[in-house]
Amino acid sequence: PNLVFRDPKFKVRSQVLAYRGYADMLELAMNKLAEDIGLRKELRMVIIDSLFFAGFMKTGIATTGQFVTIADQDAAVGEPFALRVDPDDMIMDPLAKQWGQQMFMGNRFRVLRQDLLDSGLYDNDLIMSLGSRTDNKTSFEAQYLSADKSSELREVMDFVDLAEIYIPR
Image (tube, rainbow, N blue to C red; front, side):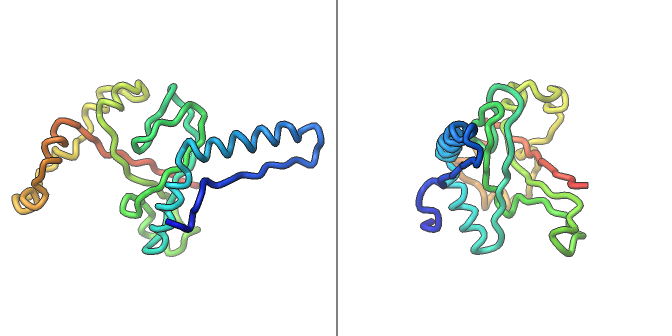
């Protein structure tokens, strides 16, 4: 955790005198954004992951809707985001022997079904046809081992698993 002490600080400079004011404003905005999106926390978790296996971070720009909820974090329209991806949730090409040979990669994540319906981004019939995590009936032993109070909450909160896949070619 101490490998990332504070929020990252960006330094933006321009060789063109006319653009220096804009560069200073961009620097301030980027430093504020790093604080707002919790970049320090995300970087800390990615570094810890990389000590034990591999650290993965998904970055992008939220471009649809007023706010987009990604991994329980609201991102404003057009706002950059950087989120840690758990190594267990990574989807990588199993046939690739080297990193550059990946034909696809992505990550799995879970979303509340109601949030998908409320977003208006997807067809509601398609959303309703998606299976829920609680639809998968497991063996009695697995249910017994995982029996706790959170199972009651999972029945009330209907989560669906989604995946984002990137195909570079």
